[in-house]
Image (cartoon, rainbow over all chains, first blue to last red; front, side):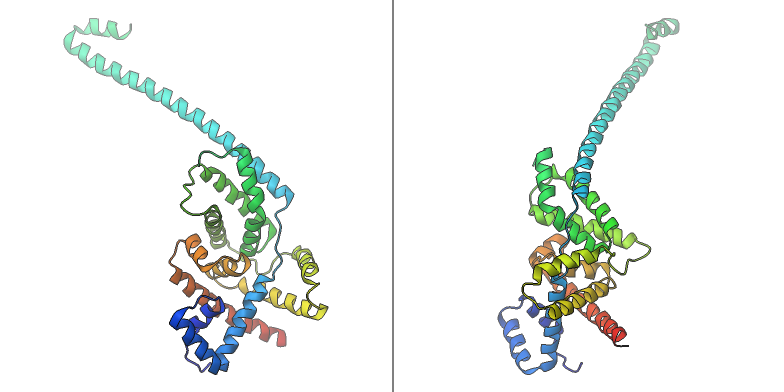
Amino acid sequence: MNCEFDKSFISLHADGITAGNELQLTQRHLAVCEECREVLNEIQTFGTALGAVPRLRASDGLIQRILLQSKSGAGKRRRGSGRRILVEILKTVADGLKIDAEREESLRRELPEWVARWVMYI
Amino acid sequence: MNTPSYKEFRELVLANADRIYNHAFRMLGNREDAEEAVQDIFLKVHRGLGSFRGESGVRTWLYRITVNTCLTRLRSRKIEHLFPDSDESTEWDRADAFVSAEKNPEELLIARDNSEMMLRAIEQISPEEKEVLILLHVDGLKYEEIAETLDVPIGTVCARVHRARKSLRKIMDALHNEVRE
């Protein structure tokens, strides 16, 4: 390749992206440069060839699997909610134990030891 | 958007499954991987639909998930599939039947050869370059849509397309030489 014209302009021109000065510059250059016209032609051929590959269809089986999966995915979320509720219950129990510990400390300070221990078992 | 109902999700799947599957197949090169990817994509869509804010269009959002899923799979692959799998031929036959009204058998054969060679060549460029060409030529997205999908400036898309075409050209030249020899 001998022509040093920026080929990225040709690439953009092939997709109809160039406008204004870039468009005029590219068009003027293409009018006189066979090499760049070939590059443009090749890019357009690539595009046409890629655009012509068969369009594939998702099978009915695949669609059914996706829909089933979404249902089981929702199920998992419900199970997740159950787990979250259980965690909340455990946290509440733990908070209760924390209160008891605080309470125990306070009772130890204020009451004779044997009374405080007895109160903790109530 | 709130948590989607089954009906809403089903409509979304039916409206987009072919498009997404087609993209995944072209990216991953075989039916099995493409089907797994599509299931994965729609699972992500189902989980994300409730929090989808609609800042971009649903189509762009879908493509974004598709692109990320396919690129992740492609990058993690140890062995590249260089050629599409054999059931592709059935699809070619269907496509030929579709365009045969416009072209004579010889033109049809040349077009098919070109497209097949293009598919072989495109398997050999980098995943990012492949992605951008598939979005542009196979999915028919505009530059602005590709930029939004890939979350990059439009200038980056222009540069990536140009780079991808250069890579493709080199590989196509090599393939043409192989055929001549």
